[in-house]
Image (cartoon, rainbow, N blue to C red; front, side):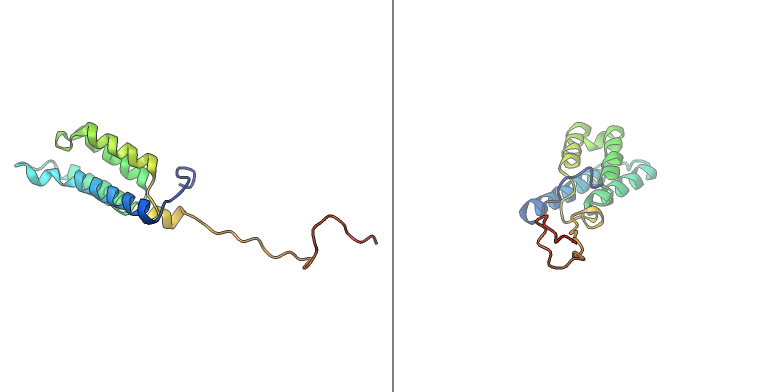
Length: 128
């Protein structure tokens, strides 16, 4: 996952990505409440799975892949605009306020202290 996203933006860009993920999740499950007949239950289950993965930002590429398939299958989702927004989210990444950021995000690596203590590391060592 670290190879997919170079950064996990926080503060204002991170909140923007969180809002973007939430709106896309609602776009996946929202249209079904507006029409008379519901789609098959398995399609609804896949849509809720994709919406949850996108909203929480966990395994985001998998959630986006499922959502792209759903956008192509269900006509109520307006496939092309939704697919464009999903691909934009894939390129932007999940942001700092996501499960992926917690699992695969920034890490602080500290070098262990030198065993030599106070050597000046100039390359001059006393001759033995």
